[in-house]
Length: 311
Image (tube, rainbow, N blue to C red):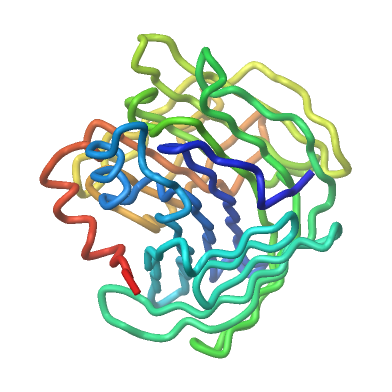
């Protein structure tokens, strides 16, 4: 079900993603482990100049974002192959490490924040309520794939730097692909929310061939998924970088922005309030614009948020 050692072709990628909201609503986090860092300017440049594509294992990173009531902390240091350990149940990148024991995923984090360097040190333990085996093709050829491994999970967060302890509802998935994402997609919107029954996920992607990916999935907490009609698209406030975004919401109400977590030139993450099938939901939402990601100006800006260690 969960393996960290699946082969990844040249110019391809895999990432393992966790997000969570604390029970008291005061904290949130995202944790992403990249092999073939899809948003890396270094990997994008190497894929462009290397016949057959670059080695994804030479572009690896742990991205951790901690969102608190007073401040947010971000770390994403890209590293080289010599810092990587991958076996079926262990993924180690630099000083940080993910372990899967069949029942829960544990992460030991040792990172440095950017742009102001501060240590991030602590542990994250995610316990799925059920595991979902289904893998969804995101494009027509199956070159890009998504597996919502544990749409319903619990998380325990304990950090020494900064001092932080909380628990909450969480989500865990995996994406992988055999080519750079920007070759297949132009934009996407994705959201997930914990519901009374389990979890609801919407995935809309605009493909470069003019077609779309549209998924509306309802997961039971104890396992199993149902495809349901999606409510109509509803606009969200444009980001500071003038990035348009939308979500799904019942037609008789409007979604509400609770907090912008990330607001970058090509990407935004936010916490929003929605209503789906009459149920008010606390929702994690993401918007991605890969046309902007390709922009030379954006590529020049990215190293300030994701430095690369070459030793």
